[in-house]
Length: 226
Image 1 (cartoon, rainbow, N blue to C red):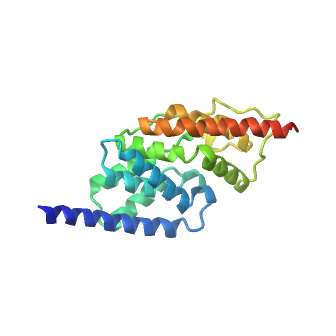
Image 2 (image 1 turned 90 degrees about the vertical axis):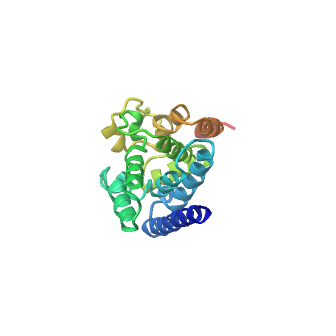
Image 3 (image 1 turned 60 degrees about the vertical axis):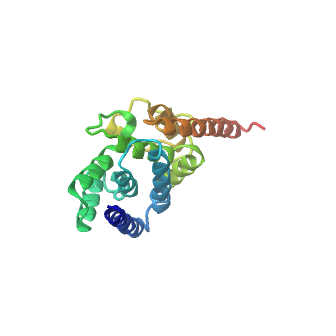
């Protein structure tokens, strides 16, 4: 029995190692906020959260590693290219169909998408990976990623004449060209109240406060205050 358990564990480890290599190669030229290091951080977050939840750890790890393998925002808005790419890869290394289906559904439903859409799939594994991904959009790293992506898209840092839009449809959110500061109000500051797990909520609280303090300092400097 012990040998059988060890064999299963080693097989999963080999699959995870293959997946890591695949993701590193695929994302080697990715935008800095959605590159391998983003994936690694989400993987770490997901592993930490999963330790406090009754979930399939193997599914969590694979979904965390593959969640941004082909992000729609870098692929003409195609929301199926991520699940399809992940599915094709996992099939190529003979992962069980049930696991592949769970991973694909997590990728399909993980994104924020303006917060105004209905998830078509729910699971504890999705809850964990979604929290892990959202945590990486908060705090110091979340701020860095927001401005990195804004620069990548040549967006303004801030424009006092353009108010945040808190009622965007999913399509409008996907196509927005608003300044990066607006993104804090349209997404980042909303994430604290959208966390799924107790662990996620606890971590999000501190990162949320950090972002509020950053914004307060940003506005002071914008107005030339000492």
